Image 1 (tube, helix red, strand yellow):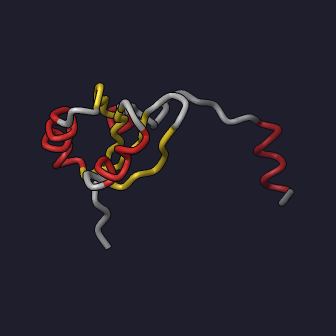
Image 2: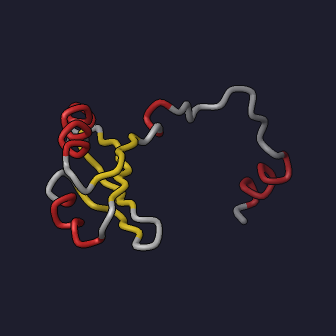
Length: 92
């Protein structure tokens, strides 16, 4: 099974009634009524196209991509805690 690379888009809008139209552009994860934004997931290869399409909508204020794919998650020089290692060997 091949996993498709996906990336989040934060879409700021003016009215909650426009959520249905935003949903058509990706997988809607969360929509905030108070702060008026929606979190969408889209395929990484389509991100530029989707951002352009969403920014053209009249009710969208701005579109911001998630920077998670660029953030390094492998850490060098991290030393494990000796007390935790002992617990793992004991089976706790």
